[in-house]
Amino acid sequence: MKFILFLLFAALPQQKISDRIVVTASDVPETIESTPAAVTVVTRKDIDERAARDVADVLREVPGLAISRTGSAGKATSLFTRGAASTQTLVLWNGIEINNPYFSGYDWGRFSTAGVEQIEVVRGPFSALYGSDAVAGVVNVLTVPSTSGFRAEVQSGGHGLRNGMVDGSWLSGANQLSVALEHRTDDGFAPNDDFRQNSGNAVWRWSPSKTFSFGVAARATSYDLGIPFNLNTTASALVH
Image (tube, rainbow, N blue to C red; front, side, top):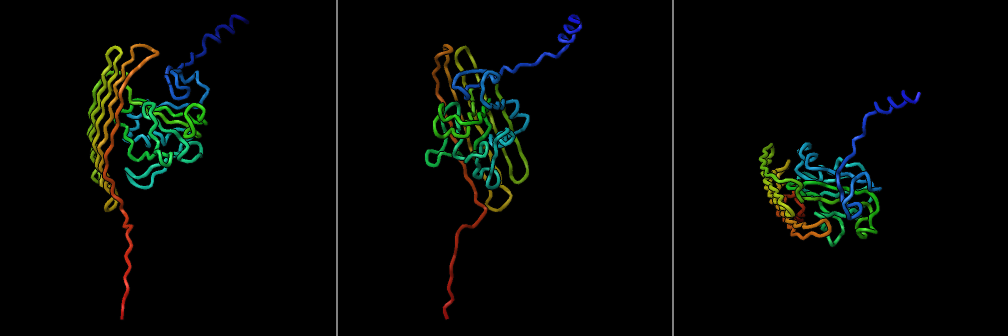
């Protein structure tokens, strides 16, 4: 009987253990399996498979998150984590807080996936680690590269959609460098519904040891957004 049980045990398929490393859940590198938090990791491969141009389109498929956009591309977009308010999710870019300082929320309408290598989503209260903005969760968008390479993309579609993007990364010893540039135009679906955007980001990091690193990160976005409604009012009076 023992011999038969041994054969059955040996025939069981070996479980594949993920080696994905996250830092958002505890502020130190750890595997997904070792963290007790509810964590979802979106990789560059996942973004490419979805052909997603915006980070909001990627987050739309993450369990526990809801995305609401007020119109066509570029319009105000809010994220809700586990039913909480849109102002209760902390948004990080390479660990740097980018929430609006005036109303605590973040507008995802113009956050491109250009240069994005990984997105870490942590659901649950993390105020003890990140402060009051992290009542519902944390979203950390990372552009630090893991491999060296260069890529260029050109896309075209209906309604005046044009999109061009180039990004490159370089790794050498303790140095990591990533640069991404994108230009997008979209005429929208109605008069004065156009959208023009130029975005770029660059990250350089020097990590001579596991306990010390030094770097510089920059991100810039400029856009021209059309509003397809006439918000002006006119009044006239007829005098006899």
